[in-house]
Length: 277
Image 1 (cartoon, one colour):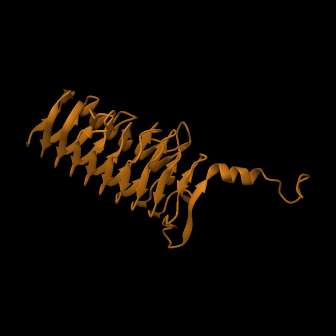
Image 2: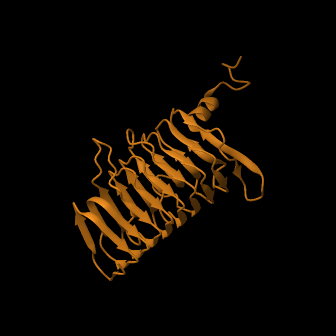
Image 3: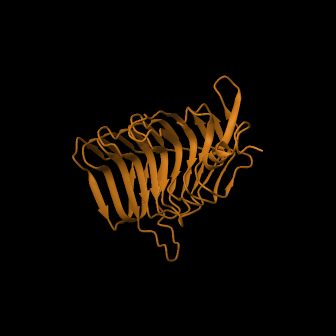
């Protein structure tokens, strides 16, 4: 409780530890890969703390959850502030979680990150709620303020009641821009509802090559393209009740596009073409 780590190359690395709690701690001006790396942990809590001014990422949790019995590791990240991270590392994240079941990530603030704020991989039943994602992806692209990848069989992670704002990004190597929530590379069964996206990147939510992703009842205000939600995959997706994309001038835009469908429409013969009938 109340520990302060300031001006370190790296701070602490845990391996196969249980019942560890950080409460009201400060991690600042860290030059290593992550401010705190907790690997193989159960009952790990990071609460009421501050992480800022990091060359790379902030907190990295690799859980020891049991995927045979689907027993939760009972890890919690709550009521923290992560800011000014990724100062010189392109692919950094304020928080990264791997191999976890039912981890709770709530009431945190992520702001002023060069890259993404929160990434999770190979997780089931995460609950990500009541967080603020502000001023992120400042100089990077092809990523999201919140990001998951290759979660084909790792499903039912819920993202709800979060605020995403000022997800800026730059068009660099790939020319793809950035997103509020990026469900990448065949991730399936991810759930998102009740979130607010303001100035949320190219698209507020992008779904890439997955299926069974449920995205509904979100509010999207002013993204840099005309679509609040985008997909480039042949997926089964529930969109009923998806809140409309609202422009800053109050006009209503489209809420959803499937790029393959629109490419199909563009390839159809047009009036005046030889193949048109």
